[in-house]
Image 1 (spheres, rainbow, N blue to C red):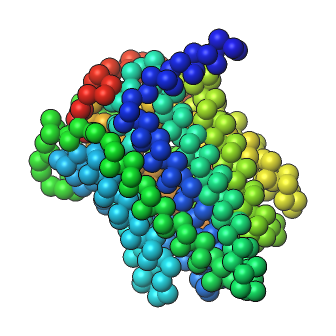
Image 2 (cartoon, rainbow, N blue to C red):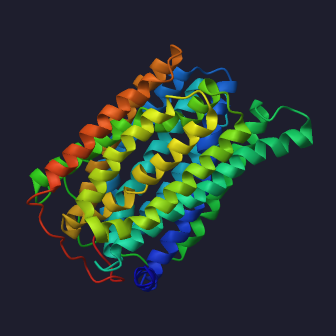
Image 3 (cartoon, rainbow, N blue to C red):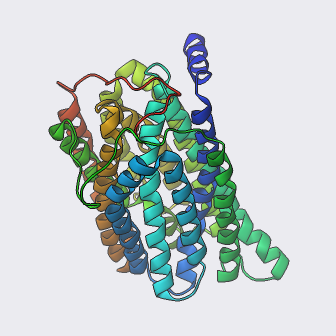
Length: 421
């Protein structure tokens, strides 16, 4: 084990300047997403929106991400990754600020902007990390990036629980009131401005080697269409399973188990921490079991934990199951990103990232809409049973699609050189 730790640290020390700055960016945005994950749904609920409307918002944001994915890939190819990151942050800031406004139409427009922001980062992140690393340190870069995003979410989730309480102590209003929750979201929106700094310090290639032609909405060709379909199918199944439950953990604990906003903040912070631990440990699992077995095993092992969450009416046993489940399913995110990018040459990676984003988002949106309607009827348990079934299918599909005959990794451009986006 000491040798493995020493090798882990040695590989991390090889990260390029651009990669390190991207890790700073990831940390800042992770704080926002952690805070928003605790507060946003509760803010909309106390303003009078129903659970079904929350599902509709997920669909609107996801639809925007799907529609924007291919134009985002073309924008990044033609303008460069740095421009893509700037656009992501600016659009995200506009959307996050707008969600604080009152009318329903404005809220829907806000989540549409957030969906476009997610599409932009979706086509930049994995190609950037792949091309800014060599195979030896690549699993560690993906894992550290994911761990920082998730770990920063711990801070954000804690802030999401603490800020409304602090506002309440200063004003005398309840911590779960709309003004208190709006205050917390406003603080989170300021983080998008801070995140512009590490982007400004990056020196990324401008993508000039891969000009994009044709319709903005057309799906570009890739060198291995069959492999692209396999990757997309896995992303779709994963999105369906995750969308049924992940957007509504806070609603489940609040409405079904009776947890307070402060408790939910703590629960989600620990969930993020466990997911970060899982991400950091994933290179060791890959080294021992391989990428395919690590992915398939995590999906299958998450099933009994998902069912445990709904087999009790006590908060802490359900929370413990959620934490371990998070370490498994969220922890293998970097493995998936690493694995899929290595299956394609650099010129295909932005397009493949866009296809993955589309497939995952479609699954997420449809299942989240269904889950919202189910919860609105008063049944907070059924989405977890449906999700468990999809995770079983997902684990088997990953083994079937990639367990045999999966082509070897394709080398990247030299780390630190401008690479086509």
